[in-house]
Image (cartoon, rainbow, N blue to C red):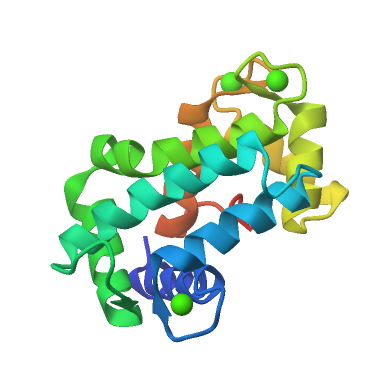
Length: 177
Ligand SMILES: [Ca+2]
Ligand SMILES: [Ca+2]
Ligand SMILES: [Ca+2]
């Protein structure tokens, strides 16, 4: 694991999540992010799936804000974000990470899971990566790396592991856009 890679990836994540470009993260950024993700998956930004994803982002933001010592109505600076996200990933461990990011991942899976079996197959994954801007050629390779038990379906846990590994610099598949 390279700590420099991890920090750089968190800074990029911060920049992506700062949807309004204010230089800090607020609850409102995540509402816009949820709407944009829903639209990228061809769903209505005011629909049920977008609302669920918005709730999931809101609960994640509350956790990060609390850890940073600010209220849920406050703003997270880039340094705050990198510090609390690093603590979550490198100190708190997989269980805490999955608890905080799990609802967001389930929300995205809900948008992408066309056959509604709670898992992501190859075809669903290809449309996921298209929605976040990864080309098809990379999708097959990425699927095999995320599908660690090789059963042809991605579970929420396999997807969460992949996000952690991406942020550890161990995997180059960016699932969150
Ligand atoms: Ca912002
Ligand atoms: Ca499915
Ligand atoms: Ca699997």
